[in-house]
Image 1: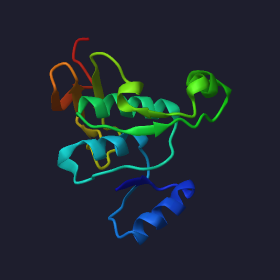
Image 2: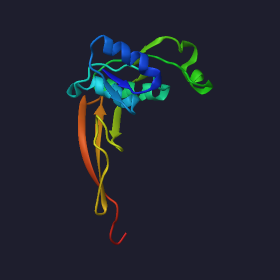
Image 3: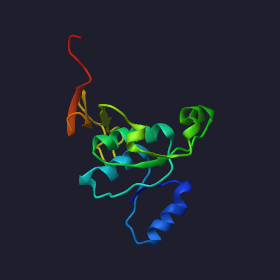
Image 4: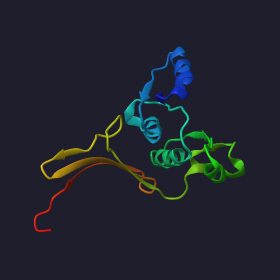
Amino acid sequence: MAVLDRPRHQGLIEEIRAAGARILTLEDGDITAGLLAAAEWTGVDAMIGFGGLQEAILAACAVRCLGGDMLARLWPRNDEERILAGEEGDRVWAVSDLSHGDLTVVITGITGGSLLAPVHYGGGWAETSSLVLSTRSGTVRRMTTRHQLTRAGG
């Protein structure tokens, strides 16, 4: 079970531990937590917690690309999010409600974590690790890209 390590989640963490489940606490990453639960290769079976509206939508898009599912109840934090949630803000939303059509989601690791390596710097280059997820092709691509930071003659 993946849970963000936040004061608001301490009660959840205690309940999960009391039930005997293993917990992966994450410092950051609502979207990462959802991906860890949806990706078969991570060993994480579920994610629970409270996060932002935008993060729930981005996570739903990525989870759908992985063939996973999720349920979310939107909890608007301000007037802008209440307008986005509309009159149905209190209902339970499935991944298909939060993401539509053909999707391609690209995620690149910056600081590193449970899902992707951090940016590595070398002499005049930086190397990034990314996931490219697609509903159209049903693929998950892992990419390592070397970015040239200095160019001679340019």
